[in-house]
Length: 300
Image (spheres, rainbow, N blue to C red):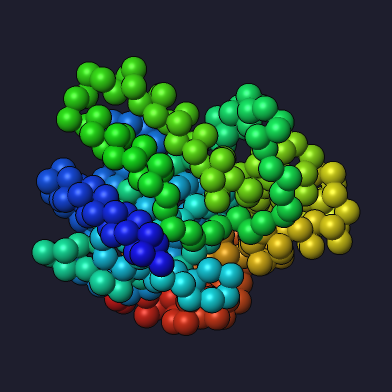
């Protein structure tokens, strides 16, 4: 018990120091990209309303503040010292619970290069790879000290830009290696194991993301990834908690919501993402976001 308390305190100190560093680096709210392609930061200085985004495959660490997310039908908090990993493109609704000008919400985002994940997997000895069962495509777990250490060394490189071309590729590989060998590794190994059910689901998700505006037949999608319709439904729902067509609908609605908030007419946004009926679109929108598209447009 004493050891766990000490470890928790040490992690709080590590995330706190990293948050202090980011406070000096980031001078504005929003997404803050860096010269390291896969590393970015996010800052918000006040609580927010619920927002909807498609999360790309990423490893995200909350350093300060508090965020609430709706994952797999339940509300979960995302606190300092916790990490979220998404191994697929997945729609997530979230909002910032705790943030202020003095202590804004801060997180570090490491975008996963799934090709590098697969390459590193092939380099690992088979004995070091655990047998794993199918897992969901998103999870929140406490961040390990080894992962936060790699993140800190990435951030420190910003003080020495000339070192980035040489050292960052090594740190990127190390981060993915640590993820593969840690609590996050199970889902990554499943998704990158060719011909596994999770890998087939990932390929189906990629196809839906590229073709969400089109009418997609589930039998054709199943055939494309070499699965039966029933097997695709079963495994797709295990990873995303959605059927393929429900997932496609979420992609359409999330994209349309962005367009509406940017000022596009509601009917235009609906047709742009593949809806044939504006009234049908409004019903789905209200059911998903708990508000009408007209109210969202007026609010922005």
